[in-house]
Image 1 (cartoon, rainbow, N blue to C red):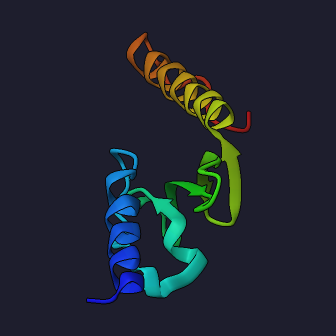
Image 2 (tube, helix red, strand yellow):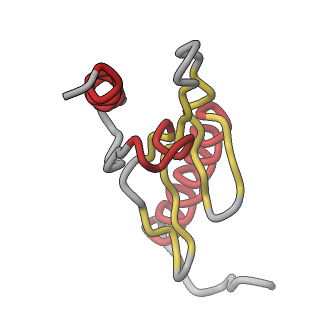
Length: 111
């Protein structure tokens, strides 16, 4: 094994050992810059729309960009995604409580 082969092997190992706990990317130095992108497991939001965590790390400086939550083609900060999640839960709880507390059928959506 040449010195450059050893360096590549160490780089491959380092990339994998520095993955965040949520990363499911199969890293391979042959992917070039794409090898430094960490992606989480996909979460199906609706037909054709997937959400996942994503973060890139500069191989030289080690500086991280992210993590972000990518939903379809939209990139959200973790704080933005958390706020959106809280809003969804609020909607669901409001809807659930209105159906549990004497929904008499006197009101329907849009009236």
